[in-house]
Length: 203
Image (cartoon, rainbow, N blue to C red; front, side):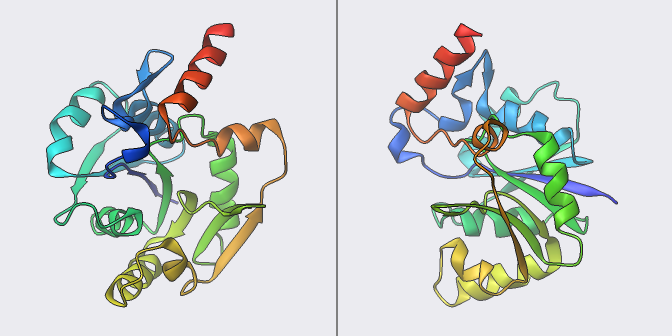
């Protein structure tokens, strides 16, 4: 089975403050590079979705990564992560896509492999926490997800719920373990990044 990794990285990151969130460093590497390397461990190639103005800096950050990287650029930026995923899927040539947000640098390859297995026979395998599903740490069957995203966006539904409601989704309840907590950690603020950086230094 061939699988493509997808990084959704086109957002403006307004909650993060100054600078490009995807390029913020954790343990000496950009979060974008960390997420790309995680995906490279479980996928045959990686597609990075971003805005045209981000591509040059992102490519520089990914120089030397040991996988094939292709960029899928948002023609209409700032339409939200579902639109970003739809843009990325337009260039994916495999049946399955493993999707991560660019701000999930602690994603665990073993858990992603489990989600790939969980996607057998359904359109998507999506972890779920008490607060809801995690659609940007998930596995999707490409063709039905493209169609669902198109339908949702055409209906004016920009949230992931609009696409998920149109798919046969296997929700995987994430147990409250350190492995899952780390893997699902999203760095949505500079303060959160500083907390994680301090943990890296302590190790």
